[in-house]
Length: 234
Length: 234
DNA sequence: CTATTAAATTAGACCGATCTAAAACAGGTA
DNA sequence: TACCTGTTTTAGATCGGTCTAATTTAATAG
Ligand SMILES: [Mn+2]
Ligand SMILES: [Mn+2]
Ligand SMILES: [Mn+2]
Ligand SMILES: [Mn+2]
Image 1 (cartoon, chains in turn cyan, yellow, brown, green):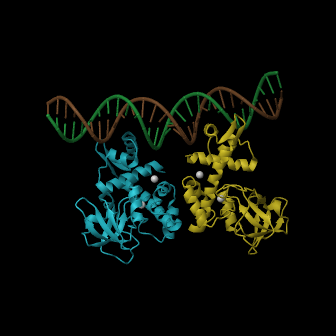
Image 2 (cartoon, protein in one colour):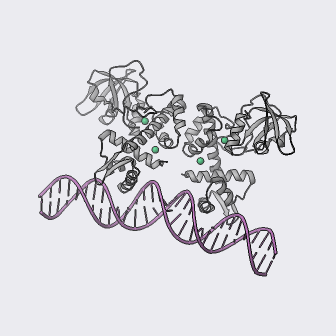
Image 3 (spheres, protein in one colour):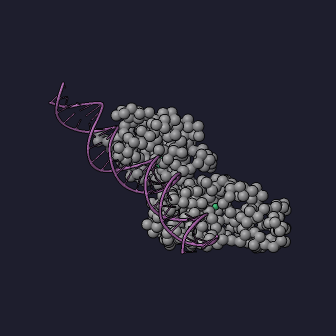
């Protein structure tokens, strides 16, 4: 019987932990959830009492195994719901997040498994984030960012696009830089502008803030190009 | 931004109102929602302040037009979700209720419309309760109970089976007495036992408590027998 | 070692939803 | 009319989640 709030805290802590590792600070959580630090302190106390995280005052928190399991269950539901919305109800990748953020707390295990089955066990959500299977054996691999992975002239397959910033995501979807598409890096300027050529031959100039949110695998894996494989947030 | 609780109160009040008419008493609401009368009094005060119902102390409450609209929106979402679960995810009619009761508060209008479209604008949920269309122009007809509608020897089409009691519903589903099936009343005893013959020729003896929860239309409408048309609860 | 400062915690409040126990009420009975 | 009795409301408490304002702490700079 975790509440919506509890699940959102666990999910946020898990995300931060998997990016910058434990301990996760009060302010990081507050930032992620748009709550005041005081609120976070009190919630985090209660989470610790329930054994979902360990906490060192003034130091930060770290999920316990129980807390991580609970977090992964939320992530799994979130991403499956996103995949369902996109595939069955024709949502755009830019539209799925908010809906999934509410529903993730209210679908049963039964529902989750049935949706997963209906979608034939999808590997990733519409942004390319991997969907933990029922046993929660999630790879949760961070993936390689565009400039880190590819030199100018090289090609790769988009594995994931971060869904953190709605505007950035919108831009990428418009440019058709989405999981499964092939991109070639044309040029990288000293001031961070990355020019890429997509499948259809059009070129796009990506400012650093955008390029950093595109994760690729080197080379073109023509087979099964639809199921992304990298990872990070929800 | 009505909360889950507010929506559940409105839905319950609406249901009672449409059965026994206003005013709806504190104890009726308490009974329907399994809350104490004191709790209901305080919630009902707040609902009145928001203009969702009118209230006369010690008399009871009645939904305002605004309250009825809000209630119908919940009913619509509830029934559409039930229909979706049954048709897309192969839930049994006995399994859909609890899931829908949670989700009804968390799906967006967008989601609702898309599901409705995916299901091609279904007229009724898996129990035969009519689904109010987007403009909420709901017929909300109570339907006719088995013994009231049919004399022994007459046949009718099941329009709706009440989902109030889970065990009764289970029984009816097992007997394949569900919306769309044809039943013939074979016999009605003085002590309330109703014997019916279903489509496949098998006979079932229904105690009064069960028979009263089956609603039929006289005659057999072979065409469009799948979409029920009567009404009542969720 | 002290002073500054940013981060975190504590103190205290509020709101929504719920409960239990006590009081008030309305309708029918003697 | 005066009394019961069942229903309803009031009083007062608790819990989860949140906030603002005040305080404490840890780290850093002098
Ligand atoms: Mn959420
Ligand atoms: Mn996602
Ligand atoms: Mn509900
Ligand atoms: Mn129903």
